[in-house]
Image 1 (cartoon, rainbow, N blue to C red):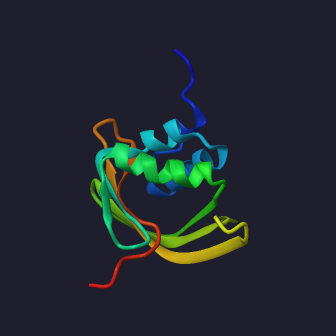
Image 2: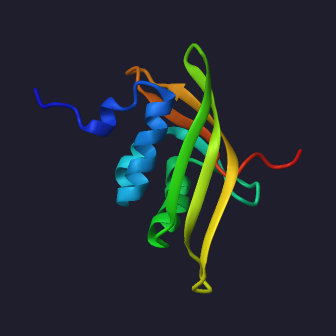
Length: 134
């Protein structure tokens, strides 16, 4: 039996999942990053719009990778309740904008994780740029 890939092993807790997700984005490995999302997951984009489903989320992540964005994820607190968890932390995004100028932005983030049937954690809802105003 082959040993599991490092990022497969790293999904035993929500914090490990976030670390593995950040590493996959840093490598530009969209396929590995997408495996960490629930099939019916959602991400809340910077404008507050909800983007749902792996394919649509993949387009958001592909844009980050294609534009050479550097993504830093720091989860500072995780609250678990059975097979769901809430992660609170900080997203740091840096790179070169369409105007050629370097940028760096930081935002508070919130992530809902769910435990899959195989016991691995997955991303269910992600608000990496923070929650929109009500």
